[in-house]
Image 1 (cartoon, rainbow, N blue to C red):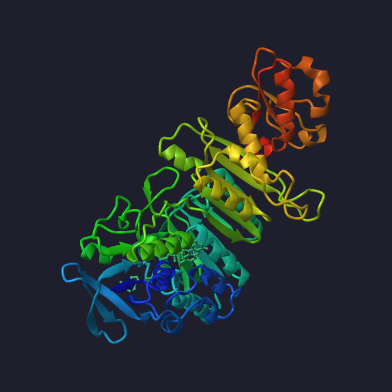
Image 2: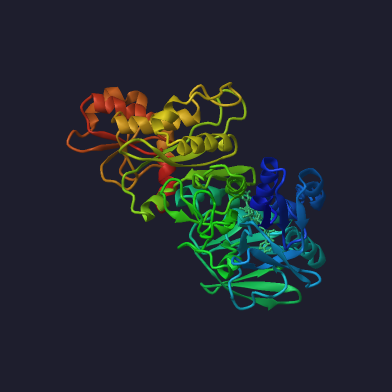
Length: 543
Ligand SMILES: Cc1cc2nc3c(=O)[nH]c(=O)nc-3n(C[C@H](O)[C@H](O)[C@H](O)COP(=O)(O)OP(=O)(O)OC[C@H]3O[C@@H](n4cnc5c(N)ncnc54)[C@H](O)[C@@H]3O)c2cc1C
């Protein structure tokens, strides 16, 4: 059996190596148009910033390793230009010499990835405007910074890659402005969680121009540029990074007449098989089923690409492996802050018309408060009201974000509920977590809501506002019209509260309000806890 794999990075390389482990006899040819296979594209921003100093560190495995260890033939600087599904051949073109040859295949795997979007805006081809996808891209950006002694950069796009680039350019001493069309950074997050990231970015010197799209680029001065926006602003820049998203590479698939999906990616079944039974496709180029909503979507991430490559290899080798869908579990580090999410966001649920869900906010510590170094985690959890199924989680913080989101990702994948979070037995010692871990807390709060132990309300709803913080906290800022009765005085001051109105109780982040809500409910009041406390109000309500 001869298997040709197009694209030799995340999906392609993982498919090739897995296939060899399953089939010693298969003839495997892996082709990439770039100079390297199996390079760490996720490390590119850190190479630009100098955290990963040596370019060679980005090269995870080379042609020689594939040849000697896995008996896989690799051709780099070689582009697959067409597929003949009738003859079962691909046409290869040597990118350097232009030489063309034809290779037959029994099975073909497409893992061509996704190309950074470069919109046809005025001035888009001016020197100094870069995208970040390959090792030569990173090399080019470093060389440009050194050659032009760049001082100001504009990053267009406030997603993961844009923000990683912003951090790394600041690290190199550049003044950085992020221009983003949406009115928030990090599109997978809900806006109120993204606000926390924006505050952190500003604290570290990143200028944010949100809610403003780029209209074009023009030359300014000697080597300088200006980034022009739709609102009429001109941001000066010596260097521009375009990070406005990626588009699945589908040109080959189109030429071969393979079915594409509604979102423009290659359509595959759960075995990663395209509409042609001998052609598989994996990675950023394919549409996937959103694990939570069940809808087709595009989620370009390294983990899914690797797993899909492995599944395609399994299926080619005769196994019945199936891809379960993509949850979009992702994390990004920005100036010491970790920002992570898994599953559905609230805005995605709203967009898909979902009404059967509830959300909670919580701000637990990353580990026992009495042990030095504990940091606040800001978390948002989404779950189904009817059966408690966990739908999504987002977290931001300086410590312990990854393990909480990973635990939640696993619960989502297993179709688990907030009660499962409540009952999760997680590792604990004071420096690592809490005897009630933030994951347990999230489950307890959500399950209390479902059991009716803690009726929940959200900022903006109508009711009598009760602030149960201490007076000095109250005087530092509170919701208009709120009455302040500190939690410890509540039992003796119940007479001050109305019995004919619903009481919406808040504190700093929700814990004292929960205790107060329980007191009020047991004393016959109609009370609900304002989710997330005054912290959430600051984030959620417009100033
Ligand atoms: C800067 C950056 C940072 C990232 N950080 C993260 C991260 O932290 N976490 C995360 O989960 N994901 C991250 N990603 C995304 C992740 O790298 C991708 O999801 C993953 O690499 C996709 O794998 P793939 O195999 O589909 O495509 P790729 O890894 O992009 O590989 C596709 C390869 O196919 C080659 N190719 C395309 N067409 C042809 C053709 N016709 N002939 C021959 N070769 C062809 C391309 O040259 C390319 O080398 C990052 C991406 C970038 C660019």
